[in-house]
Image (cartoon, rainbow, N blue to C red; front, side, top):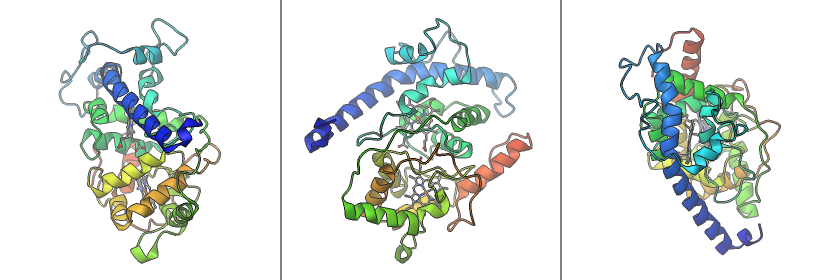
Length: 310
Ligand code: HEC
Ligand code: HEC
């Protein structure tokens, strides 16, 4: 803990994190492709209407696309009481995802992975589709979900949305007092001079998100939040138009983004951090992803699977 308080310690820790992340990415990718993809392919063979090519991309249980399942994944799989053949449940198949997306002990500087547990299902589903279709750029994620059909992505999203393990306490403040105050002001009052609405107007007064498709802003690492704004600004991250976050990102200064990210990352998550069930009022800027998720939910309820409409 103490050595990470010095700038050198922090830098070392960040480098170590990135190295670990890279090694993890490389070693997990092969195992996860086999683990996640084969049941999906089996599922699409079991009557997924949109697949068209039931055999296409089927990795074949005995022929994983990439050999050498790593020790990390073995360890993760063995987490189920050490059983030699753990039952093939959705939870079991997704354990590999939680190596990166689980419940980190504490939100510290250098963390990057966004938690998935408890996020609104429509939001998670939109992101999985966004990675698959190139609206978000993170090669490992695109690789993992690249061949998965919509119904399986929906199942994955639903699984993570339904889990509510406790949140860790936030890490220490990662900005000075003035920046923290500026961050708080942006979150609750926005910046009218720049036409930026309060973050809370869309993400909920408790900032825990709004079902079905607006994510919470608490319990996320500062670096992850800042990086998403960078991605909106340089057009690496998109949603279905109108892309409200891209509008907001281009109106904020780099300092303001850092301030909002630092303030958000330093807040404890109230209760289980469950999203609110409906927006309080009309959104101050139109968001295409919200309309899409609402339509998708209606479609799912009507039990008529289809691609989302614009
Ligand atoms: C090696 C680490 C790693 C693994 C394993 C991994 N992911 Fe990710 N995932 C990431 C990173 C990093 C991001 C953020 C990328 C970015 O900056 O856009 C991400 C983003 C996501 C997001 C968007 C989250 C948000 O809040 O917008 C979802 C959803 C997701 N991953 C699902 C999964 C699922 C499902 C699996 C298992 C099949 C998985 N991930 C496995 C590293 C990983
Ligand atoms: C007009 C409504 C609206 C406002 C105002 C708004 N957001 Fe968002 N935000 C959204 C929506 C919708 C999404 C989901 C976008 C998607 O599906 O990719 C989102 C996503 C995000 C994410 C991604 C979370 C993740 O897990 O990847 C972050 C971070 C974020 N917003 C931060 C902010 C901050 C900080 C502010 C205030 C400066 C803000 N937002 C204001 C609607 C809004």
